Length: 78
Image (cartoon, rainbow, N blue to C red; front, side, top):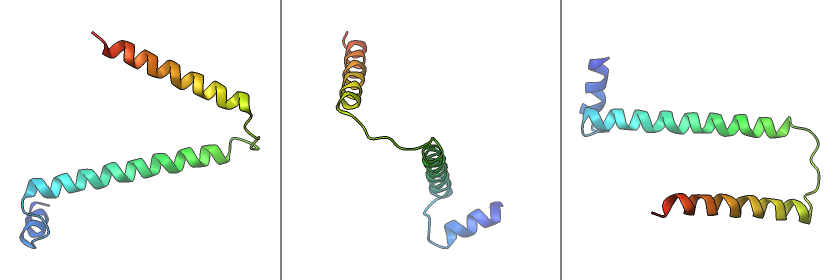
């Protein structure tokens, strides 16, 4: 493995071994995020028949967001 990594750096694609490893980590993070997104999308598709969103649904969403923001602002203040 060491020879392969050194070969990648020597090829000019990466300036250091650390840069090569950082790129591997970034790619792994992106892959895992993509897998998570796909799982959530499939979960949504499998969750049942879609229903129209009502004005009350939107108001409930707004209230939930307002509460979360107020809670976060309360925890930030000293």
